[in-house]
Amino acid sequence: MRSDLIFGALTHVTNRYELCQLASKATRKLHKPNTRLQDTTNEVLDRFKDTIPKDETETPAAQNVTLQERRAA
Figure 1 (tube, rainbow, N blue to C red):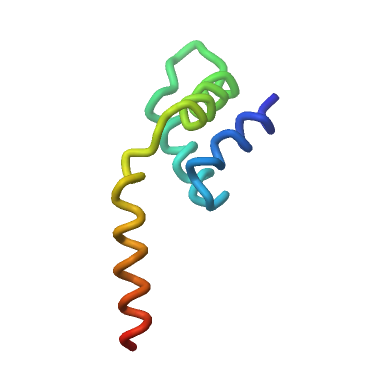
Figure 2 (figure 1 turned 45 degrees about the vertical axis):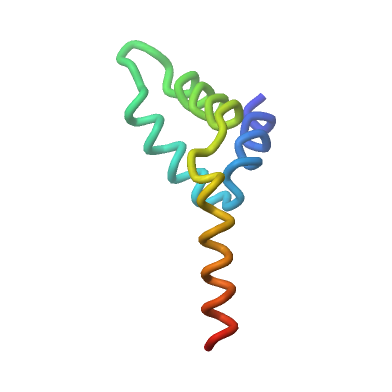
């Protein structure tokens, strides 16, 4: 079911709006003619669920910088 795919994809993308934007862009790029759009969308969400985000190592550093900026202000 698609809801399982969405909840699986939300483990890597915390913002639902961002997930919708990323999924729509990926669906447009990966869609093949003569296939159902729903199948392509499900494939994209499945890929989001299974892949490890590239920014996983960069995210804590970015959060530390923003926390330091907030304290200084």
